[in-house]
Length: 533
Image (cartoon, rainbow, N blue to C red; front, side):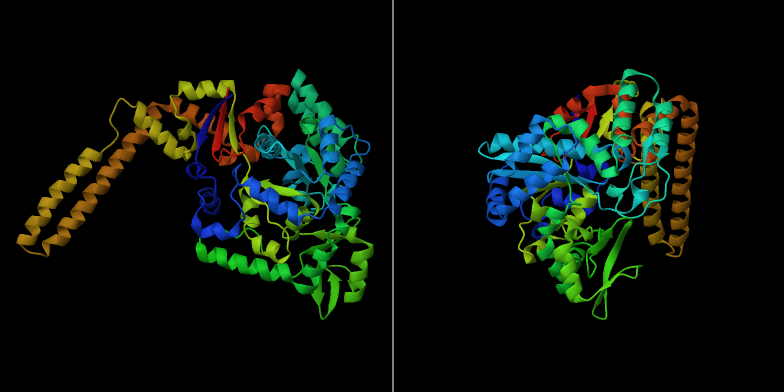
């Protein structure tokens, strides 16, 4: 694939905060640890070595082996899991919800970015080992966010009642989803492979967490990806001391609130991604995940009759740590407590909330990881690339607002000069002379001159717009082709990676899809990538 690079800021799809971070703006330097360059990982390795308890390694490795029981595990993944017991092994992590059939296309970009960074680190630091980890958000409870994926512009949805952590949900009803998908896929070789993959993942696994593990393992296991489920009693035991600081001391609430205030002072344009709660944990049981709240010295599970005294809650955490589920503020800390992690790779929204957390980590005495924006890409098939060429478009043109793109193209190809700038300049010169004349006579004449200038400039603007509109009608074929192409590449006026499911590209490329993406995506490029055959 040919690769074109576009600065994230110039795409128009990334926030000011993320663009400032990528530009290493000094005003936000205090909100992260080290900027993600290969050279800076040396210092991160040393810091994490001192900060990560050695006994955690054995607990982590054994928990992962237990989680993989019943799954085919590749030699490289098994080697990675076993290597986590060694003090010279570190992880790079990405996380994602348990979206049905992976959800949006960027699921692939996140994981490939993680795998490729580990390989780059191994080349730079050969004395260490680096393990790519996909953290499944199995404890999330917002089913409506994950129960669908888009295919060819239509939503394919899993309809059922759901309560509690999504990872624990059984897969009842997904055979109906497969029927809908099968009808849309067709009968090609690549289509049949997708049907088999969906069936093995979602009809043969007992719950959504296992289905997602199967899918990720099928796609990336040969590359050594390790899939981790945080809904694990032995891993939760390591989190208990930090739960207590959150629940009883309100430490994260204080620290993150202060960081948010400081970020807001840097720029009012920075959108605050998440806000901390006084308690950042849920109480988790089968079909239940509800917030813990404190009221008059007692600890209540929201919307239930469950309540604890402080002593009872301490006992519950010690004996049943698996019943405590971190929210979006506490989950990053959980990750860094249990993993020998160097870097988190995420999307713009994720990095925006990670930038709120550094002081909180410092207060908890946990090393803050490096933050890397995942690869983002626009993939053009051979046919689409040909259309871009035939329409004589620049790659950067594709990112323009649709009306701007059409106007620019029509002005370029029209045999009539639609730009009235010379006429406007001439008019301005004429009125400049009139203003001089008005100053020499009756100054009340100035108002009449100004009114006439506004009227004539507006008239020229209207003529220019009418001429452009007329040319659009005359060149309607170009307008239609432009519109259709941009709508294909930016469905719903959004980035392709946020709308398409990987299955659409798999139909085109089959098993070559992931090798092609892996070769093209450079996690340290820090530019938006356009990939073309």
